[in-house]
Image 1 (cartoon, rainbow, N blue to C red):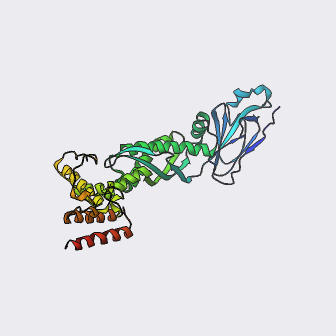
Image 2 (cartoon, rainbow, N blue to C red; image 1 turned 90 degrees about the vertical axis):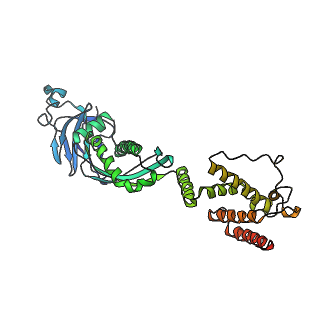
Image 3 (tube, rainbow, N blue to C red; image 1 turned 90 degrees about the horizontal axis):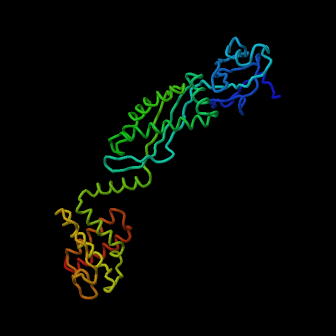
Length: 353
């Protein structure tokens, strides 16, 4: 025969346990006269067949049909309470649990007023307290089958994240405006969660947002938009994009005429392409597509100085402007910038500039 439980109690040395079941493995054998010892800040719920039969506050309690009348019909009075009956006691910590962590395990994808689509992570803390032990045990232990503190915390975090994602999805503001709205978002989320927690016999006393951060991909999009804003002039930005599209070919002064990537050819072609893009942007038309190299007409800027091709002062000035823009955007190092700038300035002096 299974061991009869005469005394049941739970000593929580950490003070962090939200809910604990005795026996831990499932129902144990009790009989009338068994003792339940409940410590300060604890409440014990006598639990049997998925139902909370009675709630015990701090102190020593004896299981009798007087304090749990329903037991009379469960075990039969003919045995005078000698026959054991399976039951369990769930100890609930009644103190307030502070600094509980919550966070999104996966990024939340949202529409953004400025960026179009963003992927965000959110983190924060919350605090709660058990307000109705019987309701809490029935909902958490009885219905959800949750018996440990870790499982309770995971379940509550899931509810918080769901409500937070729903609220963020309803925001019409940009991600860039969210840091100024942390208090408002926290208050709105807490208001929505209060009913969810109350249905579980809990009271949500506080909820805070520590950070709402973009993923790496979204952060890159924000940086690119900031760079465009810093440039200001879209025509200049198109010229910059054209110069960058040439890669490092324009920064290679050792290129020859046959390769077409010499110093003059690189910046000359970059200036020509930038001019086409700028004209297309201003006129609202699509930019002309460059012809294959075998079909392109010969232009003075496409030949290297060694072949006798002429580079005009305007092309040199355009090359200097592109060089300044690339350096300001961090495309080239200061050493390369100084070297190439000196080369172009010397070329201007040779032309009488």
